Image (tube, helix red, strand yellow):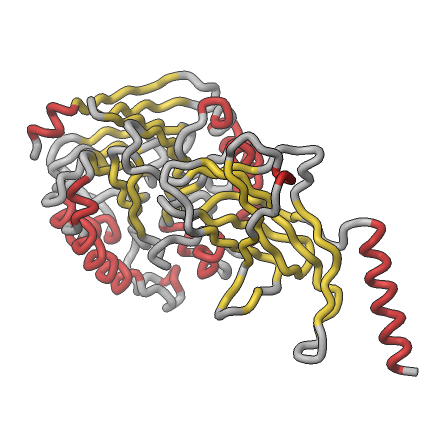
Length: 398
């Protein structure tokens, strides 16, 4: 009798799945960890699922013209089951555009080693919508354009206005340079605060997100989940990559107050993490890949310290600036202050300029063999500021 009831329950579950998809996309997808030979697709589902991504060349053929290779969300040789999915696609060519679609099967029953029952496959509807696209990085590309926003603090409507033109203008990537939320108490806050809007605008256009962590991303019960949603090639919140003529350093400044501050409840260990990051940074700027790049740009949420700066900024000046001053940095791009500021003197101890972007504007970087252009725009698209770093100035500094 018990076996019969179990069988009937399974049939009913499977039957309900036939009428409509038993699992749907909850959030995403969005592109992460784009490199020269691969990219990662991140999304969540409405219930536990086993998922995969199908990939096709962007060659004008129909997606259904051939059997497309499948890439699975796996760990230690086994497909992962859950609601958060991260699928890595590898073995691709630099500077090449690919099409992809996401697929998932709901877990109808999970009885461990006894049996697991999966529902029907469901995902991107290629009969009604075009497949998503992703383009791998290309160090040989003649130019690069990227956008930066920062200090949104969950103001989703502001982010939407700042990124509204992204699908049309199609930058190589968008950088979220810290403090996109005031704290991360639940993963849902990431989507409500900015990721849903970002995915809606950027994913159909194939524009990836490169994120840095601000001091506020260190706060909240769910703050340790940051890398689950923003995976990096280093497995840390600091990493580096090259696109076109620019080598980008994506740094994590940590918290702005000492680890002993009462606000951190005895849980902060930022000092040790910054020391670890500084050692990594020293190795990166000594590498051939870094030295071969014509231009070098730093993304860092907090600003290296001035005379009246708080503890965290002073530590950045002490640990990072001596390394960066020997690394031919062309410009550092920061946030944190919620206002625009251009610093090109030695008040922060740097031998390179620092541009601090407002929390209500987007910063656009364009770079090629002739130099770097930096422009800021408000939510209405009005041009506000411009800075130009000529190639001859860059070479002269070296």
